[in-house]
Image (cartoon, rainbow, N blue to C red; front, top):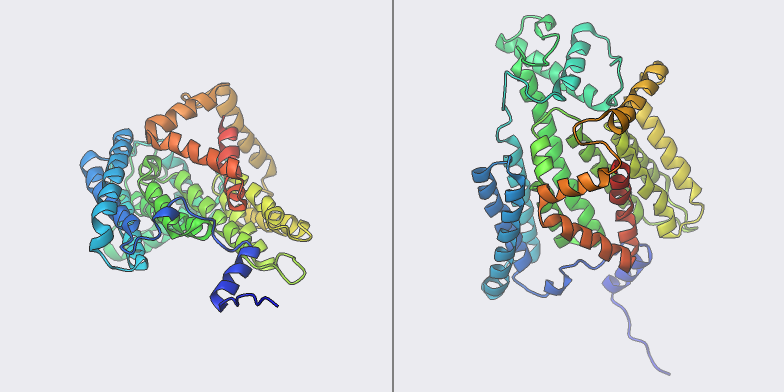
Length: 421
């Protein structure tokens, strides 16, 4: 009788993990995995540092040139690393991965902290006072009802918490004598620039968090190298760098959407129970992430679609557990951090409707019309340069090969772009 070869414990665990959907899909850079010197990690480190130097010289107000130069730097660095470092270096790959992650996060942090006090005490961006004025009023009056819901309430409350800490610090430094020293409005100029500086710092910290969450999600789905490449692109993404200097809801919404997707990946990878049911805590946690994203910017609620797909991709029994549990957790979280939406339901409905009417029918500087899909396509090309068609190509490859991990990633960007269009 023929004897089958025995499997090592590591092989057995890998096979079991693959059945559970925990094994990462093969990364695009898998063909380079055999190099002992980890040339891809070395190249990414060079990319991060070179692009940081370039960005400091060029500045974040020329995003197209920055992205084009970053692509050139990436190609040269990768070629040099592959040809010259493969034999010269013997460091383990995981050392390089730690180095490149530190380089990427550090570079992203420098770009976001640089120029944080721009414009002050003048306030050139019209969307910042829409958050700051409400948060300051909460501190002055003690009334936590925002009384308007053009934006959800989560980031306003986070800003109010930061301002409270700043105010306490300001008392000890002689900057303020009482809470009424805060200005009633900052529409054009502010008499408390420290408020803006601290508030923008919160946006910066959330922007850095996006880089880490992107790496974590990419690593868990496709492997560490793909996670590092994704983190590099996010660290130098011009809109995230630009908006990372502002007290607006865009970067916070991106952070909480990234957090929700990270928890969705954890739900996707979580082992099923012996009867192939999805466990409750990963479901609830993913739903909380969806609720936090929607409570920062309404259209971020579209991240709920990947949540609905998880039990189908995992072929779990009773998918209604994910749909019901995740949906209830998302709704409960949204109304917990937007608590006055129900007591002021007419105002909430009118304000959310006004956002749709404003963009769709009244106009907001090229962000409206029946050809929004074309406008945003041009915007992404002008902003990201060749990265934009490469991203489209990547989405097409993912759609054609149809791996389960790809089907988890695809819905949100496609649906979000469709909603914008």
